[in-house]
Structure formats: C-alpha cells, structure tokens
Amino acid sequence: MKIKTSETEIKHLLIAWFAIALAFTILLHRWYYNYNINLPSIFAISAVTVGLAFIFHELAHKVVAQRYGAWSEFRMAPFMLLVAVLTAFAGFIFAAPGAVMISKPYLTRAESGKIAVAGPMTNVILAYLFFVLFSLANHDVVELTGKFGMLINAWLAVFNMIPFSVLDGRKVLAWDKGVYGVVLALAIAVLVVSMGMV
Image 1 (cartoon, rainbow, N blue to C red):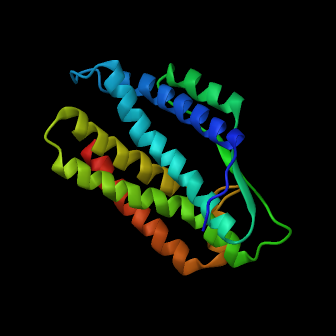
Image 2 (image 1 turned 60 degrees about the vertical axis):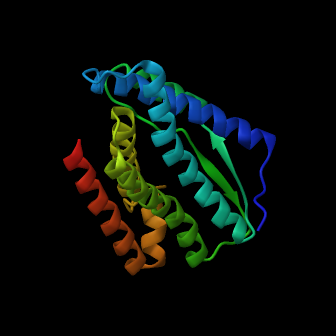
Image 3 (image 1 turned 180 degrees about the horizontal axis):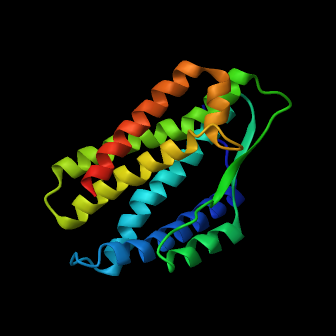
C-alpha cells in the first residue's frame, strides 16, 4: 500500500520533530550534566529517542487509517510546541506536538480501535528495540540513547493507553478489552524495567 502524504504534512512533521528534540535537549542537559556529553550529542539523543517515538507513533496511526480508506495527515500544534520548549526550561515538559487528522464518512469500532492501538504498540516495539541497544552499549552516548529511548517510548505507550478523552486507550478499550489488556501490560512491563535503569 502506498502511503499518501503532502508537502504540508512533511513540513509539519519536521518542525514538530525539531521542536520536540530541542525541548528534550534542554531537559536532558539538566538531567545528564554529570556525563561528559556535549549539546550536539544530547540533541542527537533527543532527536533519535523522542523524535522517533513521536514520529513513528503518529505515522502508525496514519498508515493504518489509510489502510481503511481514510484521509489522514499529521498537523502540528504550534502553540503547544512553544509550550514544550518553554516548560523544558522549568525542568519538565508538557508535550502535545500535534496529531494525525483522520477523515472518513464512517469508521467501524474495530477500525477505530486498530488505528488507535497502532501508535502505542509502535512505542512498545521501539522501547524493546532501545533496550537491545542499551544492552549492547559500550559508550556513554549509546547507553543513554538506549536507556532514554526505552523510557520515553514506554511512557508514551502507557500514557496513550489511558482510556480517557482523546487518548488512544479509550478507542482500544471500546474495540477489544483483550487487546487493550495485552498492550497495556506490555507497556507497563517495559516502563517498570526502564525506570529501574534510570
């Protein structure tokens, strides 16, 4: 299946990716000041970990939605990107960089649930891949990339599986309680492991 996109979507994805990476660079610089790692390296860690977590989460929603014949494109939220960067200076990040807009006359509960679960499940898979990277690390930068990549992806998966409001968990739970339980359990397991590594 060919993935449909546009110049507008690509521009929004790149801007959001850069802004989120910048915000987490500011935060990680404070967290990991005791490591001998320069700012460009911290930016690279942020871009690879948080950037990929965010990009692949949104693209997973997009790909599955297009599979069901829906129009779907990512749109950034400029004000929220600014909030993410500003809050990073305060020692925390409130990040809601944007979302995939989906349009189709009708989506079944199953289709909606599968579109929703694609994002968190992608983060679970990425978290486990970053764990493998951490396990093979023989350098501070690689170790931190694996450790933080695992943590941020696990956290995003767990957070998005909360069955509340516009979060993915609400649609997944409405579709299939079994799938919801399995994905949530996997996300919590990798989050617990990653928190123990911090």
